[in-house]
Image (cartoon, rainbow, N blue to C red; front, top):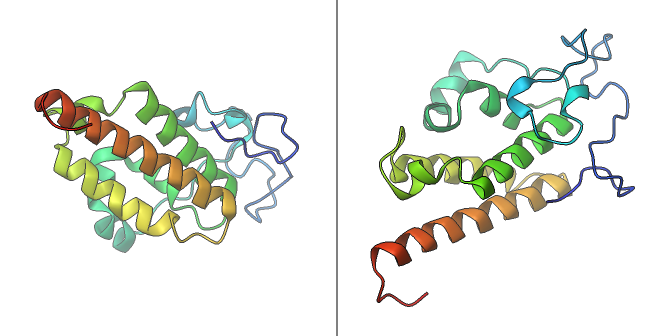
Length: 162
């Protein structure tokens, strides 16, 4: 897993107030972090994501269906880079731990097609991000997805080359 902190300490480096708000915890006065990012190093210090506009929510409907509003809001956080990084890290952790396996490999709450469509939409945004860490985390999402899809195909078609 990639670290956000370039010093190598293994967590998100809290560099103050990334959102521009006068409150350093930006809607997070108890400093507990967004619960949906639990497991991400340093999530306790992160602000809550800004809500999506109704127009953006409509455009991102496939993402919202698969990943939920909280994660998508963090992934599309325009002001808070560390939220985008944390959300991608959480997505990578969930992919690696099998959270989306039922959705990708079988019929879960979202079909494999819907899940892959959502990931392609997400990767169109994050794959072209100017922040190198966002781009690198996106490549890990791609790698995880390809492995999951190939594993799924190999298990359905045992004679297929792997």
